[in-house]
Length: 387
Figure (cartoon, rainbow, N blue to C red):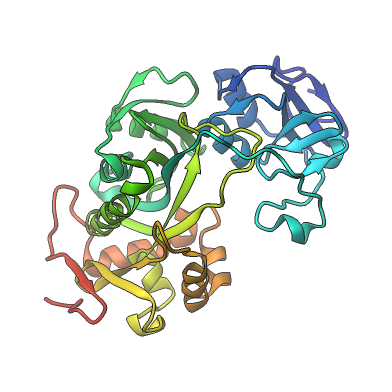
């Protein structure tokens, strides 16, 4: 072992180790989450260092690599004539060590005091929906991963998962049972998977304990018909998220409309800002935060979904003509932004364990093959507690 970094000397992908960075160089046009790269990102790195993927400005990275790199605390840097540009935030840096040692400006680059460079805007883009959702599964019904991926992909465009795997290229035919068993075998380590289908890509994270599974999904799919089909796709996706509240236990979900690359990769370019369009506050969150319909203002578009006595709230935020940022901020303010932030930090299963199992003891888990209780799907003011 190198005394400076907590990975064996030397992983074949490592090009250099500095006081602050583990540098990995790639000149590929498309940089993927290869098996060696996935292995490197899964290994511990000594405190104070970050893995830095360095590429030319002409390179692009896949959703799978971006997800794994961010999860590992890494950074993507594109070489420029004056130094490096953060491929995700667009912030310029003079040196590698400066880049990896800078505060994360992803939420507000201006507030960080760093310079966000003027970069070329992406030109050939397509309309997409990105969905982030976290679900809790009790071990009592032998849960299987991937149901939410199937539901969301179908809702956006009638898409079906085709292949999956832990690294790219993906070579395993889609199989929910096989992916779930793989996650169980990897426990207690966190499992990360990639899923691809026609016109969509997804990253799935699973944490398995003897109490159940925490599943987090980040999926991006092309919208059929482009911008003209966006509002219809948002409506279908809202219905699908409502359906998830009747067949599983999602805690939160956020849907963003965005413009992205046709192959769903990322380049170090400027993309139009995403637009939040749907927020789901699942039943575990509703109970944990003691939320009620009166928690939200009258002008907030709240739809009650879920099971009787266990409501979830689906909020419409924006659409193809209307920005949803103000509505999202209002919704988070109504719930309590700090409470939400604390509750979505991993590992969720441990944090929510008492709530999850208390809920199951009182009301029973949604049956994996159907509802044991009459479902609820009503606008504000509808009956949500029928026997």
